[in-house]
Length: 228
Image (tube, rainbow, N blue to C red; front, side, top):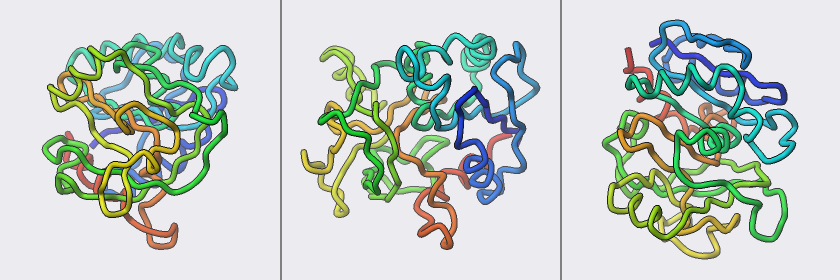
C-alpha cells in the first residue's frame, strides 16, 4: 500500500501518523510537502494533525489553499482514499472535500483528553476491522472541533450513512456529557458521498501500541493496509 502524508507549516502529527501506518502493516509512507503541485502514485493521502500556518485566519483555512490541495482534490475525484485527522479534518472541510465546518469548542477551551467514539458503520475501508456500534477510545487535542452544519446537511449525512463516529460514553451511549466540544448530534467524524474521504477530530494514531496506552486505533490502520 502506498500512502503519502501531507506536511504543512505547523503540522506536528506526521510522525505519529507514519508510526501508525507502519504498525498497521501499511508500509512506510512518503512525506509530501504542501507546496508540491502533483502527487506520486498513491493509494491513500493523509492530512495529519497540528496547527497548519499557525491556525491564523481560521483553522485549516490557509492550508486549504496550498498548492498540493488541487492535486488532492483531483486524487479524491478520481476515487482515491483520503484521511484527515484533527487539523486534517478542518482542512478537508475548508477545501470543500467534506461538508460542514469545525467551530470553536463549546466553552471556548482547548480540550486535551481521552474520549470515546461509537463506530457508526463497519463496512468502509477505514472501519471494517471494527464492529458497528463498537466503542473505541481515542485522544482529542483541539480548540476548534465543534462540528457544525445546517439542518438539511445534517439530515442528509444521517440518511446517507455518512456519520463515521459519534462522541459517546464508554458503554456506547450517546450523551450530552460525552460531547465535550459541542459538536452537533455528537458527530466526531464524517465521510464523503463515496465513503472514500474520512475526516475525524480525535486521534486514532495515538493508540496503536500497548506502550502508548492502548491499541484502539490500530484496526483502522490495519484496514487501510489492504489498499493497493
